[in-house]
Image 1 (cartoon, chains in turn red, brown):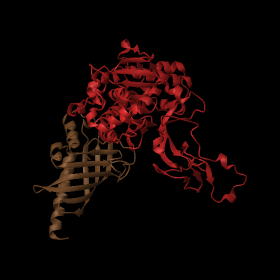
Image 2 (cartoon, rainbow over the protein chains, first blue to last red):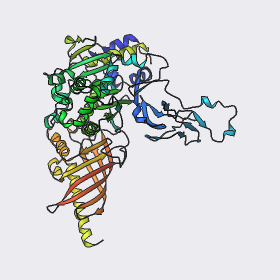
Image 3 (cartoon, rainbow over the protein chains, first blue to last red):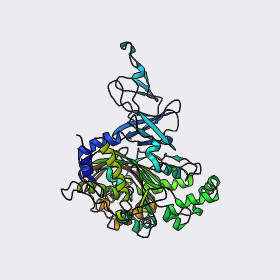
Image 4 (cartoon, rainbow over the protein chains, first blue to last red):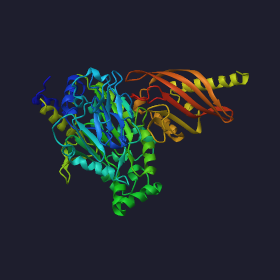
Length: 418
Length: 161
């Protein structure tokens, strides 16, 4: 199916999106080709394969990917398909293996993807083994350990793709006294019967927390509700290229207390705050600990959710897996334990927050199949968008500004492909 | 099996059935009252024996978090459980795995049928309890729920499992 530019302009208007864009399987197929198999997609973090020959199963959109660290210490993104007859060579979620042996006819591949050995080799004459390795994702790039892959042989660099959002990773790393993120706490896999874009949009929707999460805000000592209230100084931001942010720093600066972003105080984390001062100096450490960690959705699938990492994986037009883990900051065991505890309470199939979000995703997906109205309305705050000092559009924390940014980018990718 | 052991097994079975019934019928307060003050409610992910202090679990509630979970249900606006799942579970294969002066370790299997807004789901789980006798009554000091599919992507499971 070819979708022309004019059609995309009709399906995605500045202040509303046609329901079929979420629920039509043909649109989903187009997205796989024109977004997921073209743009940069987050795969995994280098700390997940910290030792040589470590491997972990990841995905690039619907495609399974084996992320390995080969014998030379190089991170590789291999496709899980034997070059012989197509059998999947890796069935374990993670581990350490210098060789993957295909159980079908016992061909073996190194952790660098190269074909090592064909069983009963006398049956092969003048066979170019170098052409029969496991396929690799054509382009791979990483920034601060965050590994991205792209099936497009040519295109913008990762830095160009991230644009203004590149700095978000620096901000995140600064929370560690050693300047490094670690993804070592294992992932929950939370499945929803809903289109992936409902998650993409909701991650930086600052309008919903007051309502969807009222049940937990009412009973827990949580400052989150305040961040998204009418009095909050927090802002929404569109970095372009589909990347969006709920920038909570203005509100935390108003509060002006280190570690208030995490609902705690310096005194309760003596080792962490001491090591942060040692690493960054008094002034800078204080600012970092006031500002807290970023809340940013990197298009199309990486959500940095302050203390968590979500990776969105589309499985079908109406099925998405949210892979979620607690962020861990290298050299901060005191903080990390609490990050894990808080994450476990909030996310996953039984989480105090995410179970409710996920229920809404599913109901919204079903709602969007209705015949009328055909368009959503995402005009909130269109009259009060402003440009920040770096030229990015910002608005009230509760505005639909991030959604409008996401759809502008989405439309450009989908139209360019036709 | 001695008479004393048969009696204890009967008592344990009655406790497990009652717990199951309270969960199925969303009798939150009565269920919460089954816990000891240091109770731990644990549903691991990615295997049966991960270290919950190091890796993510689906649920890893200490006693105060169990109470918070119950308070959230009581708001009546816990969206993932409004409307509430309709539940029926069969708990079987109950055995006393180990017994000390202070605690009784119990194993059981559970098949839970959940009918939710989303769809109907069948959950299969192995239960492991640590029970303690407090003022003559059995109480849960620990309940571990090993879902047999806990390594896979799971849908919402916002009811008491």
